[in-house]
Length: 209
Length: 253
Image (cartoon, rainbow over all chains, first blue to last red; front, side, top):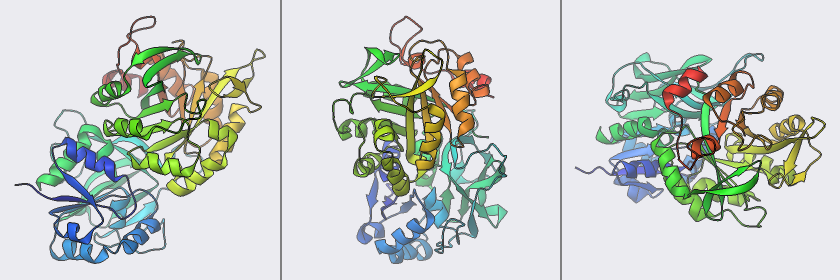
């Protein structure tokens, strides 16, 4: 049963790397900005690198808002937001003026540390995650016996309003949410495509949902 | 908690990986793509790939090679070598590279750093600073693969680059490079204390103890390795390798 995975091209993000990791898993994911192709999707990945407003405007300009709403909100196609993609799913962000998609009850906030705090922003590098509740998206992450860790690079973080939506957390000065799921709408703050076997597990799990 | 990044830094010349000592006497290490496949299998944190003759030879970044390497990396990749404009940066990022590194451009055209940061974010901008110590003990920034002395001192230059939009500094001690003698702790600490952005220490890393010292004493945010990850041991043959995660954890925690 081969699923059609479409990686949304709306002008932002390093799409090739995500496609590449799917390819390594034996999954042919297509990068597309075409409505007709997105229509066929069984699973959709919303990538993103850059600023919040840029992302929302990119989505608006792409003309894909309609098909995306239909696929996600009506047909309930599983959706995985990655990094900025995850943040665009929230209601709004400290980073920008535009409203987010609001498909998850969450907001995006800026990291803010006291001036004498040595912690750097952006949160950049490898960090371990805590598993908050079991879920098929995040299963088998610790199967190798090592604590799951991922590559992060972001200056803003998502804060979910409902604890039950939170799958994974990490800490950088504060503890914060790094993976959420509400039914078919999912988001991860880290870059699975740059997180070796841990990222591969996430993408594999997403495909198998 | 964020782990300290330990990053193979690979030097590319004439189609192959090379290794220099104090930026001189390049010796052949092997095929770049094969080496990178191995580092990827070893799940290294990140990789820095520098085309060290692109600028001197007035060459453009070789997108075909960069693309090939990017497809082998399931970890972040930084590319440096011969980047002179923002369009090239766009193309390089597009083929699957996370960060670009500027060395000559930082000295000759710092506006490019600002342009790149504005267009793609500071997190993708690395400024690479090569430093030698003068006979009077002063640290001086060098350009053109350590052949040209500049008037810059590394602390002020790093600050300037941070202001210009650099997201990270790759700080290389030319005098220690390839020597296995340990990082220049004084240099690294001076620069790390002067900027808020991460400093990646490079040049001289020969043992786990050196890695520990440059992080704990030198205050480096990350460590780049050369000789240690391409040779079996000092004075011995090529072996693409990487310290075991357990070993790194024991010195870095």
